[in-house]
Figure 1 (spheres, rainbow, N blue to C red):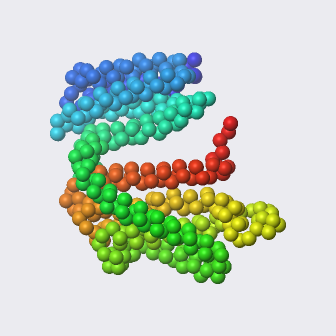
Figure 2 (cartoon, rainbow, N blue to C red):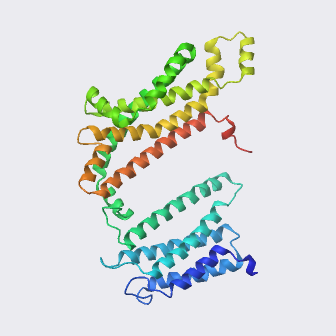
Length: 375
């Protein structure tokens, strides 16, 4: 029976017992913090129960996750109630290591769950990464507050959240200037022109020999060198940032589309040729559908490149609005929490943008082997 003990639950019990030997806060003991003491006792009791009986059902993992949530809430209350000069003690960190062991076992049990109901399975598939992400944010919070990390080096997520909620109007203006104007305009023009030129390159062979090497050269140009030139050409407003995005997205789309157009099988081409199909019939009925995975691959790559290019371009001249302008300005003012709030906006916008493109890929290339579902 001892050989069958769950090692993660055993680790949680052992770490919680060790935590009781040390004070949770410098200068204070467990008796002064009854909430943390209760949480430690619950970890010992429930983790000990699952260590002996095993984590064999989904509700076992759910109980462990709820236990971790309760312990994390108590730890956050403790660490935020410390005085300015206090630091979290050894008992606090041992207790959080115990929570980490319990969280590992609980999230792992959720991740391996399989259900015949696709709705339940999709929920579980989203729950596991969401729980892991929240746990990482929690560790970030207690590490910065518990160790007294200076705010100028790394602000706590709670501070970033407060600045985010208190600056929604500024963040919206920056988002509208950078994403809704520069990124979307440059993305549409760059990807659209890259796609059209790829058809021309495929139709005219000598362009392939002359244009593709040039594309590799332009793709290697540093954005910090191109952005000031675009500002001089198109001005300080969003048009110059869109021009940078066009340069960054044009050639990935061109190269991927040309490669995709050459991916159609020789047997399929011979079949259409035997039916007297012309170039355009072969292009629309065979070669473009075969190139769709390559085209969407370029669209997904460009969805992140476009946002990066627009933000970096705003460092070299812009009106007093925009994500890049705000980041460079607030760094100079040592308002690092505002910088992180802009980073959160950029991360959310980039993730949603990438997700929308991925959903479009799923809708148009459902026939591809990578998207086929077993029935």
